[in-house]
Amino acid sequence: MSAGLQIWNASGGLLLDTSDRIGRIKGAVQIKGQAGSMACDLSDGVPFWSFQPDFLFAHTSQQTPPPIISISSNGVSWVYSSSAGLNYAVPIAGWLFYGVF
Image (cartoon, rainbow, N blue to C red; front, side, top):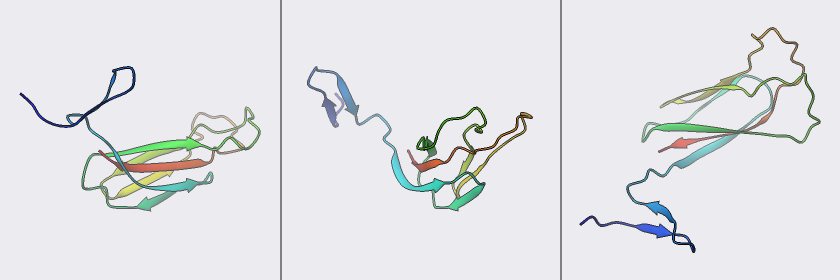
């Protein structure tokens, strides 16, 4: 018989089992449409990232795709690409959250 923590919702659905992996957010950085990087220690687990775009500006067909994110145990970096041959005018800004499982 196994032992551990299990949490159910009001409908009886299992929400959390201690055999699941739970991520820890280690930090966030606001990206404002330019390439960059953030040094951080992500060596204590499997790194992950999540980009949350800001949509406070008017959406146009001239916007770039979201940034291309690279992550390692040393930190995160991001670039914007216009390699598709399109005339990008407004890079998508937003928040980049990073952490480990």
